Length: 405
Image (spheres, rainbow, N blue to C red):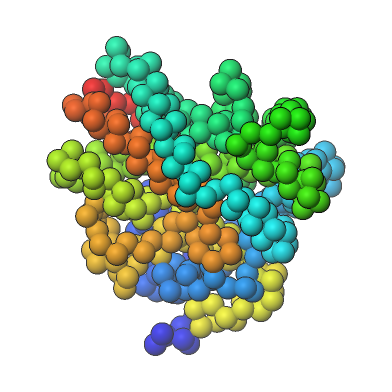
């Protein structure tokens, strides 16, 4: 890197210009200051592919614990929200690295390529059922009717929840979102209530799996508990994490991916012509508008990033969305191209914290969009502009996505 001595510039995040065009803002930061300072978040920001990739793999960086949101609250509120904090501190990726690795090895027993393949027919069935429910109307809200319920059904299947409880699962998942997006105290109270309800519910299923194990995640956890590898509290807490991580993110990927296709009719035509291009299209959706735009890390010890030394304890935001559009790595980076070759995007992370559910998210999105395009040859958007809701610090998600077919 030729600009090792470049100063760290300061940037204001929450301005109307930045909110309106986060990608434009990130392109500017990436060109001007490889390591930027965000005073509003009291954190650094990395935007270049090489730097983000190095930070993702660095043993000196830990995942930024969600409990940080709670540490900023008044003492009385911290006491009130202590149960949610205790639960978060047991989540994989939020613990010390040794505990994270212990959980990862355990879940790798479950999230094998064979498991993902075994779920494929179920994903097809769920997708057809959801489309059957709206077929007669000739219109739907993709977020509400398809993108949201599909991964909820898959997670319910993974956890071994009966079909009748799936609506409840979606409600819990919605309530828990503020923990991941700097929610206010009232939202955190609701999140805590739903989380504790879910804990009680999962303990009942776990008790059932001790008596009669099945091929689901809870049975894997219960077996590990019997081996003394984890506690029941850890098992239950990590099921809540799986619900959120596997539900919200896949729902956003499916919906955002469809918006990209509507915005690029030439690319949609290529997929209609050859559905075999879908896996490559899903990679490009992940690159252009993946569900995790920015992730937080914290320096466990002083660490060299983009030619600067970041002190221990400092928070660093890794802009995956900026790295994925770095012109040094991707030709014509702002172009959505379903035939893009060698797409080495960073949307699922790298290294120790690589997303365990990556294969599952890819498979669900692939099957869902294939079936949707096949069943709805005249699928088209029924909106003037997409219903984007901002999600801090620079991301967005769709509130709704009306279509006709």
